[in-house]
Image (cartoon, rainbow, N blue to C red):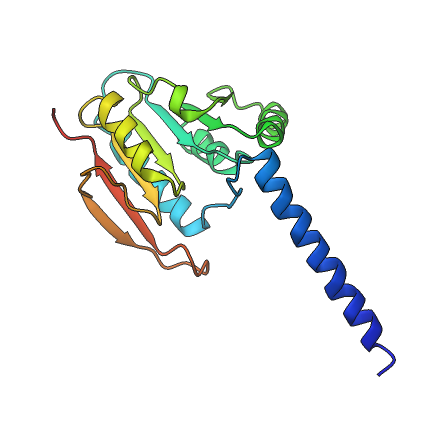
Length: 190
């Protein structure tokens, strides 16, 4: 049992790390955690974006990711749709900075990031919105007001409020236990 103090110390430092991480989220990310979208869901959303891009004649096809975090998903979208214009919206300074650094490293010219509060960002000219965001009532209201009819909206795990009715609810097989549903919407005609 000589190893027991080492286990207790490891548990203690893990608890300290978790406490500091939660403090970081509250202070620097305005309470919004940076959680990755499951790979299977990312793949499905990219498939939906490719299909939706085919029906748009105006170029470029414009996609925004609300709360793009470290930019991994936006980079995948930009690579999968090289003729699209992809924009990640992120409020966290650290996540934005990291995204910009990696974007430059990969030289993705169809990708951009905006460090801005989504509620101040104009979405009236976008063709598709992707999000893994849980404060959806205000988001739904803004999207209803500003999006043009027919705009594709995908929401990982969380259902839009404010009267939005899903066009499709897709059950996705994924190893991420808390990400199993993808909600697909199209902005209705006024």
